[in-house]
Length: 247
Image 1 (cartoon, rainbow, N blue to C red):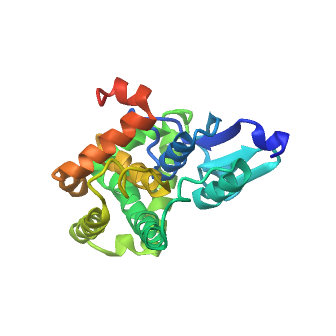
Image 2: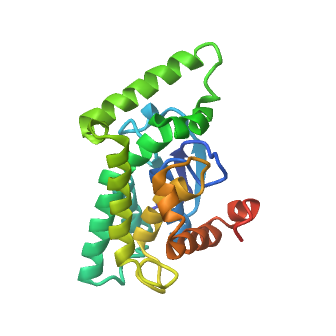
């Protein structure tokens, strides 16, 4: 391991809000994974994702490496830090992890964008995200970004459906995911793995923010799901959980 690889990495992500690690499920996922593996890092608040190598957050700077995309970042850190919370998984568990990750990141993540930034119930709260933008141009920036979000969601397909159908799709996602979840403290039982970071990122954004939605209502009727989210929160972010009365 080189000296650069031993340095504390810089994690660039959106500023915290709502008392959770991050409103972005991907930023929350990566910071949870870093705490799970005890890799030293420092957070750099970055409200403008265009600064990242893929024009998205999170991204990291690790010595001479500047990397975006949580999957690529995690694989890089596994190799350079010699840690792998997934090493103990068998072939079936690895396949399950990949499938659950795909549901969360390639389908449900778009619905989260919809519930938090497009639906009026979400926008009422998440527009506070733009308070760092100078007041003079803030309305213009907010309209432009929200318009871009709508366009992206229409091209991706989510906004081609009714609100009722979108909510039903999301609840179906979670019913499928919960059917695979163990009764232990982690997704696969006693030991944590990367899929726990992925799921907590999605659950924190849905369950632990003031954004109301039928998806949130459904998840709150699932005791195993609520307990899992609160337990993961308290384990990896005790300072935030304590402030929220979750531990």
